[in-house]
Image (cartoon, rainbow, N blue to C red; front, side):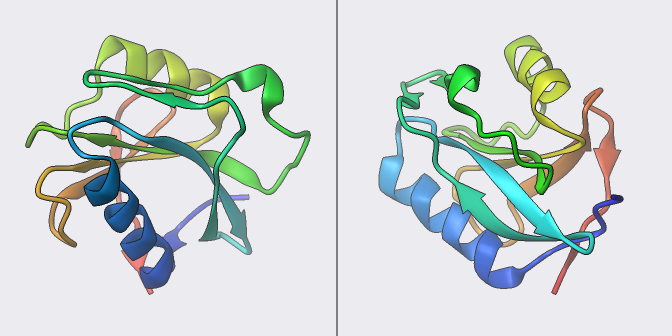
Length: 122
């Protein structure tokens, strides 16, 4: 399934979670139906810290509607780190980074290799 968009409410929820956890990072998985990201999945045992967030991938359910990850950067930096790229390669086809100040303009989507991709907000 090719992911082409994200629901506005789902993106807003992620931005609010990022604001609530600031200055720590958060991470979640994303679920999509018919190419539209509609839901965030918060996995038990996930840990957010000042410069990283770790998700226990052994807790990831076997669920083919999970299409990738979303996480926050407590800085203005939207560039994936080497740790981000490692997670991207193991958690799906599309990934979103939301950066401080966590507005509708401070996010970017990437493929599993860290290349920017376009996602429509619907």
